[in-house]
Amino acid sequence: MKIDDVLEMTVKGLAAHGVESVAAHCNYCGKTWPAPIGVMPDATTLRKIRALLTCPTCDRTDIDIEPNWPDALSSH
Image (tube, rainbow, N blue to C red; front, side, top):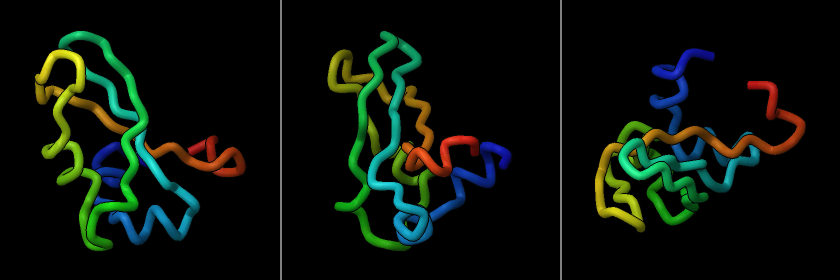
């Protein structure tokens, strides 16, 4: 799956695959953390979530994210 395809996935679609959070990575300071997505509306895309995230360490917004797939789906 291409990154653009993943970024267009919604919270509802990810939840159907068992995804409860995304791995967020700050491209400025290198901080990596899990960001829960269940608090977002079902129609929210990962692209929108990425745009809303701010690094908890340096307050920058240059963040990359990817779903934390359950073990059975981690080959995606």
